[in-house]
Each structure stands twice: as C-alpha cells, then as structure tokens.
Length: 421
Ligand code: AMP
Ligand code: GLY
Image (cartoon, rainbow, N blue to C red):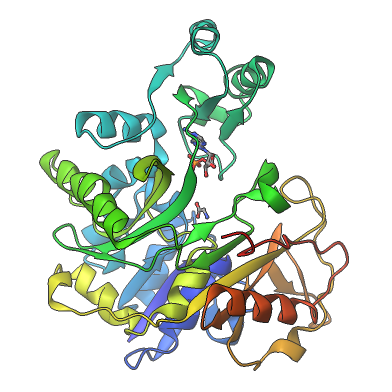
C-alpha cells in the first residue's frame, strides 16, 4: 500500500513514523516533509496548500490513502476534492472542518446543540465589541473568527490588553479576513485538557488523553505558542470525567453535525477547560494536535493503517484499538525568537547521539538539510523529543536526559513539562 502524508511538522513526523511500522505499508510519501521525515519517507516538494498538485501526485503515483496533517488544506476542502475523484483521504470535509476554521461557526453550533462552552458574543463592529468588553469587565478573551496559525486568541487581564487585541484584529487586520468577525468570550479558569478521538461519523474511538503547554515559558508564562510540550495520560481526566466529556461534548458534536447534514470523518480534537470537574470547549480542531500526536502515537499499539481504513470505510465499530500502559512526554526545542521572528539554517548537533536510545524518539519539525548535508533549523519549533516511561516522572527524566545531548545556537525549551501535575 502507498500512503501520502501532507504536512511538514513534528505531528506529521509522528504520523509517518507510526505508519512506517505498519505491516501493510510499502511506501510512504510526505509533502513537503522535513529532514527527519526524509529518513523514513520520500519527501516531495509540494506545499500542503497546493491542492491540485497534491491530487495530480496521488493520481500519478497511484496512492491508496492520503492523510492530512494540518488544518489549512482541510479548511480549503481537500477532502471534498479528493473524494469527488474517488480517492481515499483521512479528514473531515470543508463543511465539517468549519468547526476549526470558523470560531463563530463553532460557537453558534455549540449553542444550538447545548454543548458546554464559555458565554460569548460575535462582533463585526469595533465600537460594539469595545462597549461589550467595558460592560463585561476583565479578564476576558478576544478571538479572531478564522484561522490564525494558533495566534488568534488573546486572553486579556486588563481593559487595555483587550482593546489592543481588538485593534490588532479589527483595525490593523493582522490576520486579514480571519478577523472580519471577532468573538468576545468569558474567561474560564480551570485546567486544560486535549481530548482527541477517531470517528467515522457513526462511531467514536477515544485516543489516550494528553495535556499541551501552550505558553512559551515555564509556569505558563509568556505568549501563546503552537505548543511547547505535552504528556500523556493527563491525570486530571478520571474515568467519570471522560464519560462526561464523551456524553456532553464529543457525541453531541458528531450527532449535531449529522442532524445538520454533515458527516464528520477523521480526527476530532476538543481543547477543553475543566472547571469544577465539568468540561467546557475552548476550541475544536479538525485534525491531530501538534505536539499531542508526538505523545499519543508512541502509545498506540494498533496498526494506524487499520484505524484509518476503518474510518474511510465507516466500520470503526468493528475494530479494537489498543494502547500501551506506559506514559509519554514530549519537549519541544525551539529557535531563539520563537513565537516571534527567528533565524533559520542553524546547524543542529547531537542528533546521532540520541538516535537509538531506548524509549526515546526524535520528531523533527522545522528541520532541513543544508547544501553540505548537515541538518539545520528551518522553523520556530525545531524538534520534539518524546520519551516513554512507566510513569510521567520517568518519561520526563528520560526526555530531559536526552535533550542534554542536543544543541543548536539559540535553542530554548520549557523545563517544567510534566513537573507539576
Ligand atoms: P484556542 O486556540 O481557542 O484553544 O485558544 C488558545 C488558548 O487560549 C487556549 O489553549 C487557552 O489557554 C486560552 N483560552 C481560549 N479560550 C479561553 C477562555 N474562554 N477562557 C480562558 N482561556 C482561554
Ligand atoms: N497543540 C495545539 C494544536 O495542535 O492546536
């Protein structure tokens, strides 16, 4: 079987790494991939937003299954285009992907289906949004409606922060048309959880739980990033809470979409805030998380191709998905300046030293080969180091031990992943 994975980050490296262990896979391609992915897959120089070239490639190479990593191609309707041509592809359609691509769609949908989420109002006028913020007081959350590469959410502690956020989104248009509409939302205080499931639109199979660390610095300080580290399982999810999440969030979402004529197939990721032991949805993503995938897939025992084929053929209820009992933990090594501006092309040392270490996997994100054949930095988040252990403490020790061996100029990372749980 030939598989194409779309994307170039640590999440895609983890997907390719897991698929490479499948007993039924002959060849994996990745578009565009990165230096680490090129070890186990053939990387092709097609960007993930270039949907027509991707379709041409799939037809020309007789690809049996395509797996989409990032949200943009899903929001652009890659699944609709591929399915029209009779191609198997994992991910939701454009209509279903609105759960992520429009926060206004997601909030209105949740309201219609009584799915717990923060109180909110939608604005197209700066003046009305500002009046509402004055009325509600702080802390308050300001969100751009559309996709903003994880940067469209501002958790504001002061009135000035909130109006600055509004100005950036609505007047300066830093996210372009993604900021045509703005959500002003109640600020929830609690503990965050990433809850991901596989679904074929009829059945749901939960993945193991995880926790992301979105802030740049230790103790959850500094700006929001794409994610600086993860661990799994997330111990705040008790079996009772997991049932509550499935019954009040996940099932009503899949069923609500169905009632509205949308079959959701693929991965559904709910970013939740647990307040007084009850889940509230902060956001939906219509794909695997990054870096959640780097801790979830190393715990998966079942062949990932079996799961993907069951999703594509809507027979997910027929398969059993097994997970390792080990815990896992991933620390992201980032470039100096990330999540702002950063340099690229900085040589990375030590990768060979940790290759082959027991229970350690390196997932490349922003890396490439330079003209001398050295692996160099090529993005803000550069590497994810995942370790497995009997518990989070042991996984943490192993991951941070391996990081000691790696270096690149300006490398920085959080030291507190899995420390205070
Ligand atoms: P999102 O992209 O919507 O998940 O938001 C990014 C981050 O902002 C989340 O992971 C939370 O840490 C925070 N956030 C979003 N919405 C809220 C909210 N209503 N209350 C408190 N924090 C929030
Ligand atoms: N780790 C957050 C995300 O994938 O959106």
